[in-house]
Length: 326
Image (cartoon, rainbow, N blue to C red; front, side):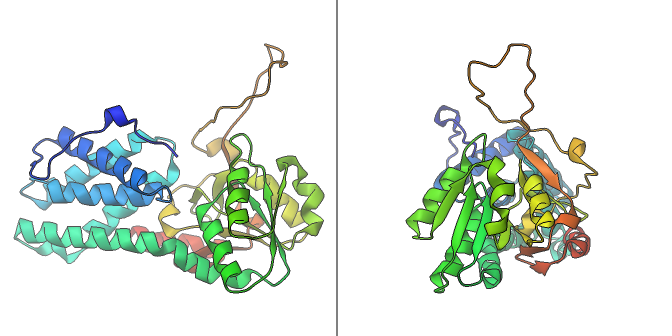
């Protein structure tokens, strides 16, 4: 997770009144980083929602159109912090839709209108924060006693779901992929071990080999796209294909603030993001290395999506997106 270097932190006193968009954008970015620093489990989208609510509190605009412009500009500033983070962009877009779709727009008193917008912003942040627990309660019902769950890399919502199932008294085991190139599966394995959940770590390339020993696959998602497919950590698509070939269910746990207005037709349509990859000193100098950080899994490979809006089929995602963005 990206962090703002401490020497770049902005200092804003409680009595400070923002009077330029540049200052408001700085406040938004500072609030965003502060939220992430306060809680390592904080999602980028939720941190952005909190930051944008802070912008409304600091706004000196005298019209709702002015407030909307400030929010849109601040959202752009937040997205520049991590331009390839899809859930951050989706969270900003959802917040802007949620706050402006309110009766506050009909109020003549600008301060009352701002107060209503702040109230809605705080409610949206609270609802988004509860999303993982809602998903855990819904998704834990899919875990059966003595089953084996395969997951890929590290996902906070998947971890919460597995914790919920284990705390209810269910006995099961988890197989975690290593999650190259950043080794996030090792993080997941450590956290599961702390919970006393039996866990086995395997190489990413071992998925086909161990699929016969698996009862279900459960992954998170960086984004849920319009056709019900997902964008997630590189290797997810390969796991989904292996699960499909072995007739094993492939479930996705994802918060609704990750629903994105994207419609990829293939891997080439994804926003490009790369992570450092160490292939060792023996690689010939003229050898090209391809190291995308994520891939696209089409809806036909997904059995169900467990979200805070309910358990959805991939086909139902487009309807939910319409409701979210109307």
